[in-house]
Image 1 (cartoon, one colour):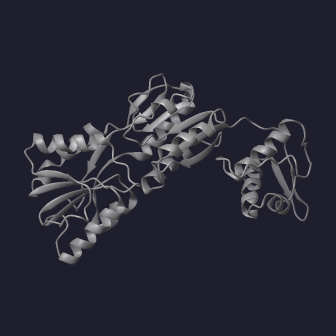
Image 2 (cartoon, rainbow, N blue to C red):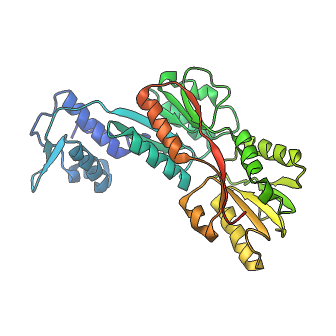
Image 3 (cartoon, rainbow, N blue to C red):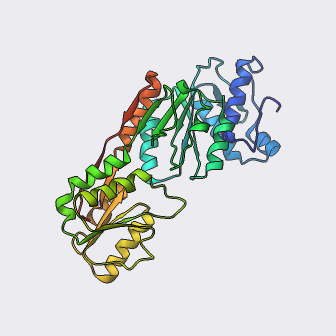
Length: 336
C-alpha cells in the first residue's frame, strides 16, 4: 500500500493523488507491466475514502492505457509508457453557468495532453493566497481568475511568469511577460449600453444594482463605465446596493448581476402585472443558455466565454506570452 500516497488535507483532489502515485511508482520502476495494484476496497479502507474516488482514478488510468482490469482479479499495469501530461492549475472565483461554458471550451481545446485541476476561491482573499501558495511548484501552468477589486499582484508574482495565464480580469500592479485574456470592463459596459441607447431611452431611469452578495463579483470598472454612460447621455440613473431594499418603479430599466436578482425582478413584474420590455426593462450581466430562453429572452451584456476558453487554451499550447482582449457586446432580447 506504500506506493499510494494521499494527503487528505491537500488541495489536489484525492483521485488525482492516487493517479499521480501510481504513475510515479511506474516511473521509478516500482511497478512493472502486469503487476497488480492495490484493490479499490483496500485503498478505500486504508485511507477512509469513498470507493468511487478510487474507481475514478483507476478508470482514468485505464482510459489512458496505463492500467487494465481483469474480471475477478482487479487492476494491473498494462503499459509503462507514460507520456508527460501538461499539469494545469485553474483557479476560478466560483461555480456559475458562464464559468461552465468557459471551462468546457478550455478543456475541449486543451486536449488530452493536459491534466486540468480546477479550484475556487469564492472571493476570499486568504483562501486565494493560500491555494496559490500550496500549489507552488506543483503545476506546469497556472490559469488564474483574480476577481478582486484590490491588488493581488504580490501573490501572483510568486508564480513564474512563463507559467502564468491571467483570465477575465487584469491585475494592473502585476508586471512581467505573462499571458492573459481579459475584458475591459469600463469600456465594455459603456460601449454596450451605447449600442442600446435607443431602447434604453424608452425608460424614465436606469438603475445599476450593485449586489452586496459575497458570491458576486462586480469590477469597479463596470460602475465607472455605467456612471460615464449616464453622464454623457444625460440619463437619469443611479447605483444601488440592493434591488430588494428599494421600491421597484415602473418604466425603469434595471441592470442586475446574480441570477437571484434577475429572478426576483421577473417575479415582481409578474406580481405587479408589468410587461417586461416596456413597463420594466432588464439587462443581466454575463450570458448563459438559461437567459436566452427565460421570458422570451433576457438582454445581456456579455463577453464570449467560449471564445475566452478557446483562446486561453491556445495561449498555453502555443507558449505565446500575449495579453489579449476578449470582446464584449450587448445581446438584445425581449427584456429591453
